[in-house]
Length: 184
Image 1: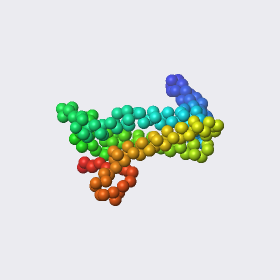
Image 2 (image 1 turned 60 degrees about the horizontal axis):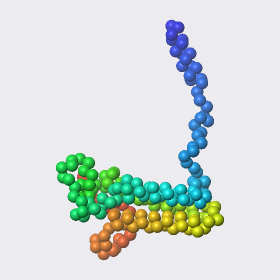
Image 3 (image 1 turned 90 degrees about the vertical axis):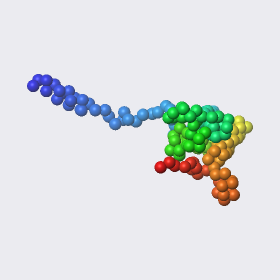
Image 4 (image 1 turned 180 degrees about the vertical axis):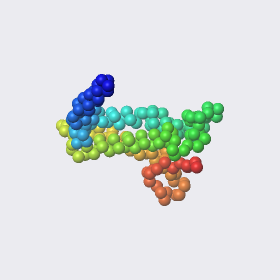
């Protein structure tokens, strides 16, 4: 009986000593509000470096992007005996599914993330939100961001866009979705 009272008192003590609500209000050190982001020339350079870092990742220039050209040509041949998870076989055999996360979704999304980040940086520069007296350096950063955005849009069009010969240019536009067949 004494043991039950101890348990009850312990439970009541724990329930009564609950934390206050302000322990949930954390001041993060790894993120900033949108209005406070990219306000100096150094911030703009860091944002540009982040764009380059994202573009050099696995799902873009770091790896998967190169499979599209090489593995769809005769430059690379996939091993038929590799089994499930055939790394380059889907490209070589033209058997890539739209739901294939590694081969389609990640490269598609990563290129759009590069475009989104370049748009954010360009918008900050053009709106005058960045305080700097070095306009030459700011223009260089903006120029590099414009090139990265153009390169990304070119790559999307080249990899996922409909060829001109399909409809003689009636739908000549940047890609709006990956044009892959779905297996049912």
